[in-house]
Image 1: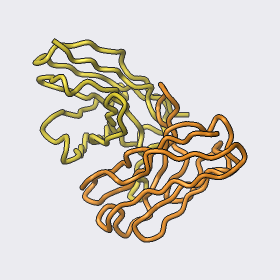
Image 2: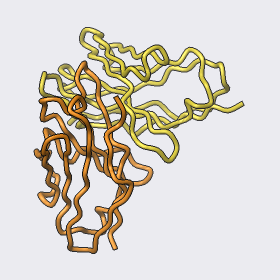
Image 3: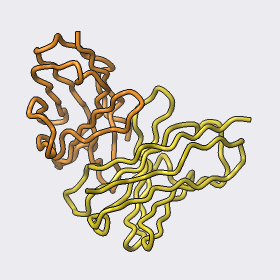
Image 4: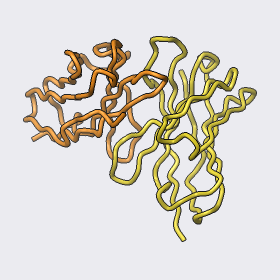
Length: 121
Length: 110
């Protein structure tokens, strides 16, 4: 069974940088994409992008391109979401989720518990 | 591409059925059957309940069913139970490795 464990809640100030993590377990992660999904307070889900840790192939939603950086360390089965300069509007819960590898596999079958990010001066 | 369009709320009595629609454009859904649905209880992570329009992951009750016609996908929950009260999100591959979510529908069991 796949498990995704995310890093803990963060409280940051505008302008600060941050990297949150998502560590996976289970052999099936070798053939998986890891996606990041944002959920702003009281709002719906937004797909930010995804990475294939085996070769670091990364895709971004047009809405998030240039706003965040997605990376991974395949040696420790971990994906990251990085901000270089946070804004108050980045306040949200961020989920990582697994997308199985495959041309027809466009769904997210395992999810992390979410990382709550609060950005305020 | 904008988010897929879902009604903000839906309700049904215990034991009855409720159907949630998910509308997009031809470019949102394309020629693909890559529609999935997620259930999210308050304070919890989303859970996959339908993929590839109508397939259920192991462990998801067959009370949950999905379909798609043209540019509208639908989720039906039959035999509503108290634990089905949650937010439901549709999701589709929108081409060019872009993924779209619907705005979400809150289901209330009366």
